[in-house]
Image 1 (cartoon, rainbow, N blue to C red):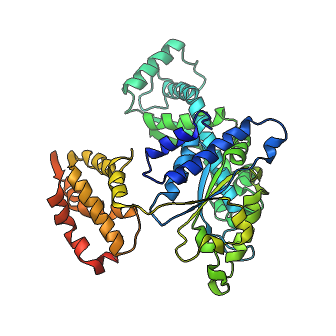
Image 2 (tube, rainbow, N blue to C red):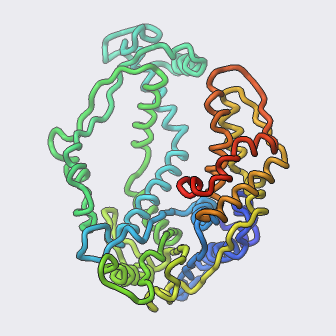
Image 3 (tube, rainbow, N blue to C red):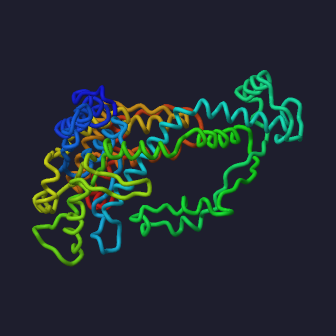
Length: 452
């Protein structure tokens, strides 16, 4: 975790990607900083300090999911987003709530493994280059390297020859060479077909179980160009340098202490006005199944048991039909911090188009520049785009900032289609251009109800 970031700095980082919603940003920033503060506490009290879970309330497209995702990326924490409506009560067909903890562990494994790959990358590349040099020297290449010899017992390359090979490799003079390499071939396709949800709860990994069986782990020869062969060998050498058991142990600790689970659509499992039965039969059951996970329990995974006591849960929902008080009281108590996100205004949409580091206009400009098209958007055109997006949101379903995706796709449809014809050109998007392309979208209210 990046302990150097204060809540004010965290909010500043979130401001680079998300417009407005200061209350929500402050709440998650404090929650993140409190996790670091807890780790600095000594004594038995440290285990008793649990995270204060957050519930974000607001309409779609205002930034609920993006705030949680950016927070996890900023902290380097394992993060998983799940939809509460996909879970079912134990005894019904569907995913059980413990699967989200297993998903969190998988995310932690991937995160820690990627960090380890970066750490050993230089050593892996060096070892891969040595193996590739030996293969080319011994005649595995189409021409060989240096003094070609088909004898596998030929003496190893000298340091001088290795340096010469690396110079040629990095200069690209060997890119046309074809080399034969041995790669791992695990014939476990039939195992994957049977390793579904049924064995998740048992913490069993069938692929690991069958790995030691005769014929299930072998190598096969493959011919590939030198650059591709180098990547294959690098991946193999990296796997050798990584202690997978240590990765698993570190990942479990990371998931337990730094993990963030984002529970989206939590309003969909609320009993609307206390009604039950019918298709909503398992709504309250899912809530009760969530209770021990959110409060703190031990979940069995194939990598070992995971305690959820210090996992941060961020729930979100629009609550158009239901309301937070429709959740069972016990679950409400597990989310002590509630933040209401504000609906986006026209000014917010203008800022969304201009300010974020990854704004949609910057994305489209970068995409079209690949085809030699320079896209220029005037400030007045941005104001008009925001006005039209706000107007369509008011006349049809309000989907917040997601409306801008539809507006820009319709606006640039002809430009994107013709950009592949070749030739460099500059296109200026101004107010007349915007009104001409989007006139039909705004005028026909009935049609606008059927599109995003």
